[in-house]
Image (spheres, rainbow, N blue to C red):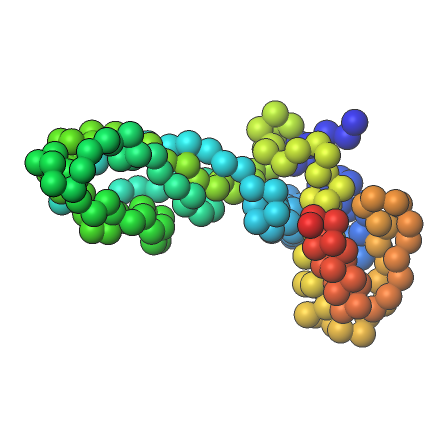
Length: 202
């Protein structure tokens, strides 16, 4: 099976773009890495990764740093184990809603001292994480089975950039799944590749 390391993915992306690859000449393969990173980002919405995190709450403090790889907040179990009634003195009241804003998790309204005392300062939560492409295959979070889909998404990104430069240029790519040739204007190729990515990711 082909490697999921960044270098191997770049090599195969270049080969799949055929002559169109010559249009991307940034040093250190920066163009191809950008295409792959954007494709990996698109996969986060279609092949989500759920990870766990925990915050240490402080009374009346609403904002906390979000995990660096967070794409979107999912849910929390904080307070779910509480058993009581609204008339109990320990009743925690309305629990905060969580929002992700500019790299921080905001708990609104901020947890009160009473809530922290009753429910605990540890705030466990789940979140959707971005996909990463590592220098080593073991560091890449995209599954081996989605390798072709990742390359397809990267091809779509490459053609989209070429289409913005020249919408009538004719280009060719080799399909990441079947190996078949696709010849068309860059704009049409970009549209076809994007639609194919969406169809196969569904």
